[in-house]
Length: 362
Image (tube, rainbow, N blue to C red; front, side):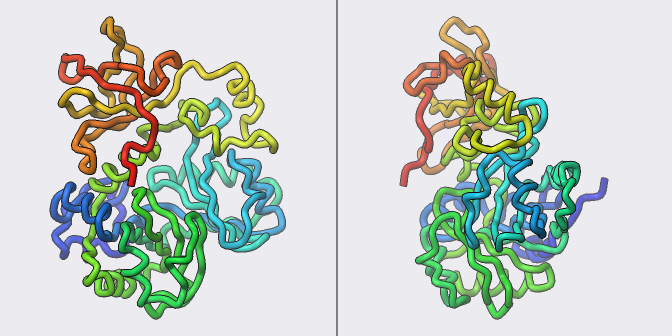
């Protein structure tokens, strides 16, 4: 299968990005070094091109009903300009995808989904669309830039009349940005260092990207690749679809009970409710290494007797903390903060401890 290219593919190559295949797209993984880029976002400001993400528009009087039926969170709580984190539960107790729900108006919404799941999610939404909601998959028409870091609002403010510092987390506004009309500016992100996500049409992507780079110059802006995106999200303990959550992990096991609302009916709600009442048998935990070692996905998690009790789903050397951290599923009895576990690193069992998230505290 031929790799898809995002609109600014050539711009990233010109910036010296190392390009790699990711979720079917040719994507920039790094420009300088992962650690340098990670620190730029934590301490100043960075721009990610995440145009591989998927966007679906839902319109019509039944749009909310459809969203309520296929997502776990309660979208009726949304008002115009608000964003909600949610997931699509599948019929077997796992997760089709995690997503963001944007409300433009009572009858118009946008769903933002993971790049690797665009086709699967599109089919899923259509499968449940029995009431004639107008659906539009605009994923190939939209570019998305995540401008993240403590200097993000200051770096971008000269480009728009939207009051960026006043924007509350998980809200968005549509307005003029860098001379382009109808740009969605969203106070969301996947880094834990604050900032904005900017949705623009592909034909305006280069002008907007160049304007952001120029406006951010005095604030230390750097282009950031997927390598640093992964270490930043992991320091916050944010789930990555395909690693920490998938078709076989229940939202309750994954610590996503807070986005699973049983006061409405949704796909597989009865089974998930029964699971909640009975209690889960395994849980997604966060752990820090107590010995010098880097945990990696698929490493075994073992107990003091050396028996396998789970598996690492994401792991790294956390640049902001200088130690190995990770996420993984273990039996419920080992999921409490403070519990000692061991990570099997190249046949050696290295001591770790279950901790509360986030790893990185500002």
